[in-house]
Amino acid sequence: MERRISFDVCPRCGEYGFEHLKMHSHCVNCLHIIDRWPREFPIPAWACFAYRQVSKQFDSQITPIL
Ligand SMILES: [Zn+2]
Image (tube, rainbow, N blue to C red):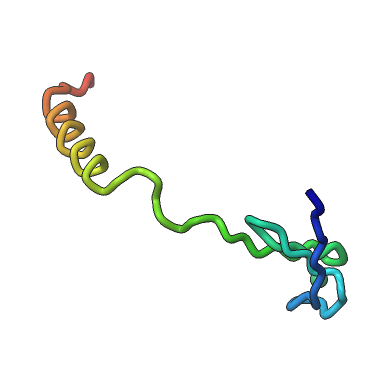
């Protein structure tokens, strides 16, 4: 499988060394990076809610040691 390297003009330094990769782009000249990782949190909202509910119950059963 042939892989073509795609360079573009860097938005920070203006040099022609801004490489576009699958998950990020970076400049070989000034090391400027723009990532494209998914912003969405990988744990579903319902799981976070359930965890918080159980966590609250667990915290209410703990007696602090003074
Ligand atoms: Zn640059």
